Image 1 (cartoon, rainbow, N blue to C red):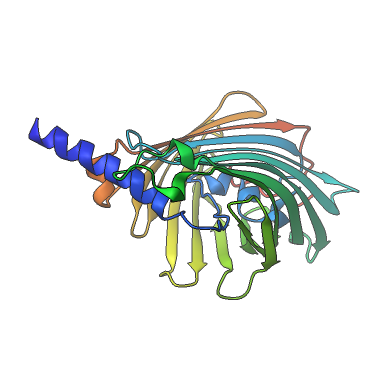
Image 2: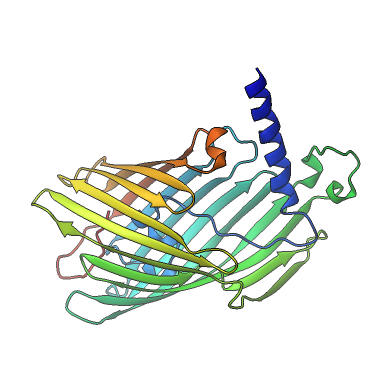
Length: 315
């Protein structure tokens, strides 16, 4: 009973702390991360659009820190396809991000220009632009001290977003560099947006790479990594190793520095339909109060690949 009481106090305390971190007259947009990003890198790099060689629709849903009040829940639905004889990639993303009393819902349009640099290699440069509706329901917060004026008014406003990236791939290798937020956006308690260009200290920078090793005719080893750099924080690394078997089933493991171990499984449900699941187990102090994080992925391919076109096939 005493242990459960401590857990209850910790959860309620963390719930309030999360909101106080976002108090004040401004709010800056954060970028959500998915453990299965390597199977749909459009979420971290707009230059990926059209690189699969066919049109595809991918849905990702992440429920983080199960049992923690106000924990993040993120949903992303993307569509991308190559056009103009695969010289251009086009994409659309719809997203919904929740953290406690906060919620951001919006869409992004994505454009990538592709340049063949070898028989199998393609260099892509991508831009992304969109808008989001940010809401914070401060009046729903229950604090230790009643009648706190900081919680008298909710926030609701529209913010722009922009991202950019470069991406090089062959049929077995890829490397990409991107920033998911070119704009520094804030919104006041009156719903007025303040938008400026992000400077070097505000930028989030992502470096990703991976390679496919054919161990046999039916087994492919797929190591990859992601490096995330944010001003004022140490570099964060995602180190991933996936094995794909019989072109039907895949398993993998990821290590996220300072955060979690991730188990990943994928199953081909048909010629063009893939299902993925990831479970994160954090080794931070939150691990004692949470049953981990769950993530689901569903990807539908539309059309067929052609052998004479370099396409990224890492999933």
